[in-house]
Image (cartoon, rainbow, N blue to C red):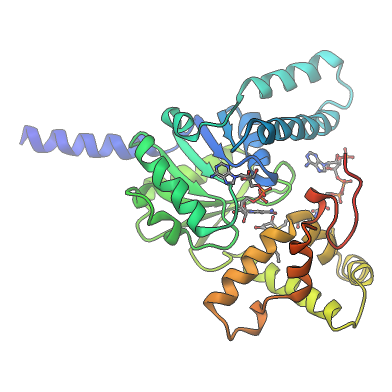
Amino acid sequence: MAFTSKLIVRALSTSAAHFNSIKTVTVIGSGLMGSGIAQVAAASGHKVIVVDKTQDIINKAESSIKKSLERIVKKKFPDDTKVGKQKYLTDVLENLSLSTDALAAVKSSDLVIEAIVENLDVKKELFSALDKAAPEKTLFASNTSSIPIKEIATATQRKDRFGGLHFFNPVPLMKLLEVIRIPETTDATYKSLEAFGKALGKTTVQCKDTPGFIVNRLLVPYMAEAIRLVERGDASPRDVDTAMKLGAGYPMGPFELLDYVGLDTTKFIIDGWSKKEPDNPLFQPSQMLNKLVKENKLGMKSGEGFYKYDKK
Ligand SMILES: CCCCCCCC(=O)CC(=O)SCCNC(=O)CCNC(=O)[C@H](O)C(C)(C)COP(=O)(O)OP(=O)(O)OC[C@H]1O[C@@H](n2cnc3c(N)ncnc32)[C@H](O)[C@@H]1OP(=O)(O)O
Ligand SMILES: NC(=O)C1=CN([C@@H]2O[C@H](COP(=O)(O)OP(=O)(O)OC[C@H]3O[C@@H](n4cnc5c(N)ncnc54)[C@H](O)[C@@H]3O)[C@@H](O)[C@H]2O)C=CC1
């Protein structure tokens, strides 16, 4: 009897330990999304390690986080002295550390958020290695835009502690977070991920592990249709953008948004979905997109996509 109740107490304390207990976070991938996620997690008081493949990439991420923080302090402390602004910056940056060693970084983390390239094999390889290195209590989440969470989770032995945390670009400004559960995700894990999202100041919505979740399931066909319209020669990217901003009230036109999210990521998504549903006319690969990606015109991040950008 005593043995059974000890077991029950242990089971309860394990799930309670998972609920709302996220204080330390490792973010893997320090590109557009990873740097934004790391920034908002650090700004909301979490201790964050952000990891990428090389020191050079990590240094670039650090400087883009600093730039974004500078824009935020301007708004947050409009009348404040330099001292208040400096303290905010110092506090956030103190919560952030940088690393190129993912396996060491996850050892002290309550939560690992993966934000690397949108490729199932690469994500699985990473999670398989992390699964062996991370403590048992550590929750895993992917920020994938389009890959089923259940397929990524197969690389681990912790499907019960696995979910999706889908952020939006730019992470410091976009208020939504989609929290995804797979059948194996426990309630404690789900609640913990949701509570983490709220602690970041995001509004969370729940969605099953369905292709594109909510936002991308609607957004990707819209963006792809905009490209098809231009491919047919019916209108220019500039006019489509003007039309959707002034005629439909969108903050960015589809081509501005495509350049903003990255044409390589968009291509990965469309190619992946068209492979799964080759007859779905909404997911047909685009020659125009393929050509731009082949030429390394990936959008704002490479200096050119549908439009040209000044490299800063
Ligand atoms: C085929 C499809 C493939 C999908 C691919 C996968 C994608 C996904 O999985 C999910 C996604 O993320 S989808 C993309 C979602 N994002 C959007 O739709 C963004 C749309 N754009 C906007 O909301 C605004 O233009 C936006 C909020 C960006 C900027 O606002 P404004 O237009 O008013 O422009 P600004 O005047 O430049 O900015 C307003 C204030 O915000 C500050 N700011 C901008 N960027 C910042 C950043 N990164 N960090 C910190 N602060 C920032 C800016 O300084 C400005 O401040 P104030 O001047 O003080 O007002
Ligand atoms: N771009 C967007 O607007 C959004 C993208 N996403 C998703 O977020 C993920 C990342 O996308 P982005 O940040 O746009 O890509 P990105 O290309 O800007 O950054 C990816 C980063 O991951 C790094 N990386 C790749 N393999 C790695 C590994 N094994 N270990 C450590 N780092 C590695 C790369 O060096 C790069 O810095 C993708 O799954 C994408 O679908 C989700 C929401 C919005």
